[in-house]
Length: 328
Image (tube, rainbow, N blue to C red):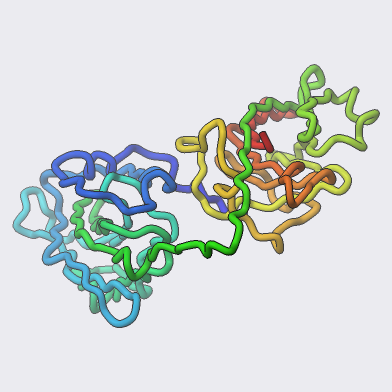
C-alpha cells in the first residue's frame, strides 16, 4: 500500500511562498477543499543563493501536455558563491493558487546526471512535462521549480490554467434517471492498544471494544484486532471482513473529513479488497473496511478507517488512535 503522506514532515516553505506576495486569484473549481496541504521542505531560500532561475515558463503543447521551459544554473555573480560549486538537483511541485498540493499532478522529467553541472535547461535537458489529465480539478494552478546547490536553494513559479469547459464540463443528469440517494457517514474515535489492561479489538457495526481477555469469546463479531510484529503494527481481520486502501489521497492527519461526510467522498476499487492486511499500518493512511453485514443498497457494514496515530511503546505495547466513519 502506498504511503500517501510522505510529504507531511518538514517546515512549511511553500505555504509561506504562496501566502506572501502572491496574487491569490481564483482557485480551481475542485481544488483546495479536496487536496492535501502543500508538501513541506526543510530548505530555506537563501538571499545569497548560488542558484539562479531564468525564463521559467509553461506552455500547452500537443494534446494534454503542459511543457515547462527555462534554465537553472549557478549564479557566479552572487555573493559568497564558490568557484567549484555545482547543481545538486532540480525538483518541481504543482499547487493550487491558495496553497494546496494537487494530488496526481506530478511533473515528469527524464533521468539527468547533475554531477559537475553548472546549469541545466528545463525543457531540453529535463524535458519537464505535466499531463493535465493526470489530476482532477480545473482553474488556475502554479508550478514551482526548485534549484539546489551546495545546501542552498532558489525557486520560481509560473501560473497556468486548466480549462474548465474542456477538462471539467458540467454533466447534466438525465431527467429520466433517478439520482442515487446520498448516504451520510458519521465519524467516531477509537483507541486500541496491546496493553493487557486496554482494548485491543473492535466490532465496527456495534462500535463495541474488547480487551485481550474478552476477545476470544467474541471472535465471531470482532472485525479488527490490533497485532504487533517486531516494529510493525497490523490489523487481523475477522471472519468475512475485507479491506482496501482509500484511493483518493485526500485525507490525512492535517486535513481529514468533517464529522458527517457523504459516502461518495471515499474512493476505492472493489478489485483491491483483501481478507488480510498485507503491510503494516502507517500514520495518515485510510482503509475501507467491509464487514459481513455489508449492504450495498443501504451502505451499512462499510467503514472508512483513518490511522491518526500509531505508537510503539517499549518492547511489547502498541497504541493506535483511529477515526472511523460509518453509516449515520
